Image (cartoon, rainbow, N blue to C red):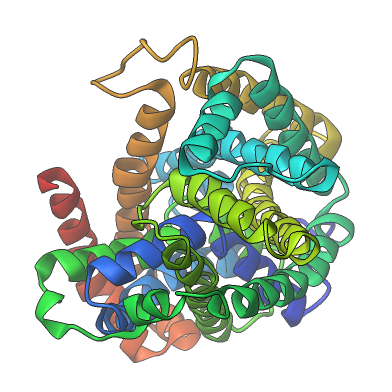
Length: 442
């Protein structure tokens, strides 16, 4: 079990804010708004909220009860609960998944660093869509620039982790999460007041229940599942730092914060996209091509205010990316601290170097290494596909099965209640299998 000297969060609020920070990420900005519009507007939001609380929350609780029960990270927790069994492989799977996601996620975080620096120094400086596309192509496809930005983002992540649970993760979460919401509210107010923004608002709010089919439900379930960082041991690791917390309450607040930010980001992004006369797209182009073009167009009429909004927007992107990357790195660092008794600094340095090396390959796959294919995917695309569609799904399924079928029934019910125990044992495995099958088909 956990040693008495293990680091801990300073209180319930710090624990919840850290979990919320891990859930709030880039996917809320470049994927959720597009999916809302494509799958029925407000009707999709309703389905998403249902999926978040009835499916993703029980998955969250599956990891949380393991962390609360053992006070250990993924590998040592599984080794403690099921010694000399294959279940400890689930802990390795969680750490490996976190590491791979961290490696390519920091590449995208590097783009946020690059665009934020440009916003401060002289503005993005694009007034046409082709110019915005060309700028993103040069940023992502060159050699030195994205590698420097990627290293800078990884260094920021490493510094926060090196400072520890309270002085690093907790302090960052307490400052960044409220600030993140405030900045996104300002951007949203600016966005919805743009000429032509009304169509973007309708895109998000107009309910069309005819578009709610099996594909829409699977998309909502998958988005809530991946947005909350499930299946990679992050929830387990953070809960091991707050063993007195009410896991149901923490999970509910995490789902609320994640959903609110996703909706808020939608109102910050889509009205601006429609105001600029653009067709909404999912993916990096939404953030790093469409929005810089829109802000560039607005700068012609209101240069100072548009510059401020651009800075606030990319600052929000950077903070959202950092809040997720620190949870991924902490899961890895915690593993070495527990398994090998490494000091925090040494464990952080080792995983940062490894993540930097794999991240270099992912970054160069947009440029010189673009011709290298793994099962038809670039290096970046393969890492994304492997973790999002397979490793995270497998990890979440295994956590749910272990908690629902291997751990003591009365103990789990005392932590989660009978309803969530039923969901973990019976409904969640079926839902995860449905996501996996839909990913294979799609």
